[in-house]
Length: 239
Image 1: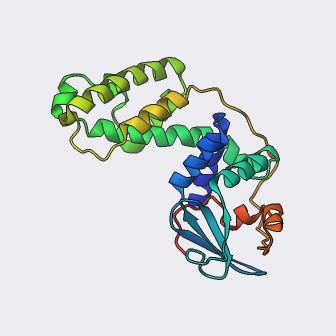
Image 2: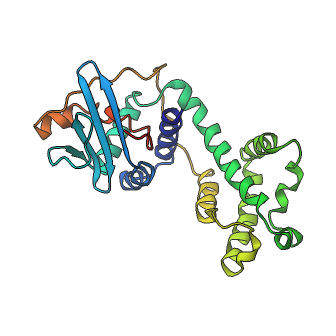
Image 3: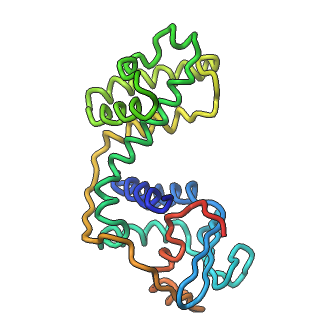
């Protein structure tokens, strides 16, 4: 579900060698609303805010002045430690993360391609994708995801996409709908060619979390499973 995918996405961002500040910004933009869990030691809640993750005992953390706040930078630093220790994602999630990254990007590219206007199609935008048509969306995006493993193809696609993006800024009629995020897609395409750091883990499943929210900041920091409390992997599930 969302938890598995979110952990894979976060691990993928770390694998690109990004700074803690960059990861913190990614986390802040990815997590919204709140989350809650029930454990043997009680109920806990978290609220994702601009200044960080607000964590409290009970069913609500958003407006509690007593809630502990873990900044996004602290969250990023702690996740980095957990990845180093092999305690953040499972071995299956690590193995599947690169394919998941390519599959999501392939879907974004293909959705945009489907929304090219007749004018854009006539002018040959994204023509490098023409030979992947046929069989329906799942088959087409699967073919594209596989092609994204080829550095030479990625270069051609990036050039084609950069041209479309540049011209689209001047001529919005090139796309029929305008909900796409070309800048994000181009960045993701370029990051596929970025050298990756490999993480290792023997963990076959995510262990059940154990929590303790102390009144002292020091203990809160030491019980870094507070990040597991919100499982920082379920960004949009409401309380």
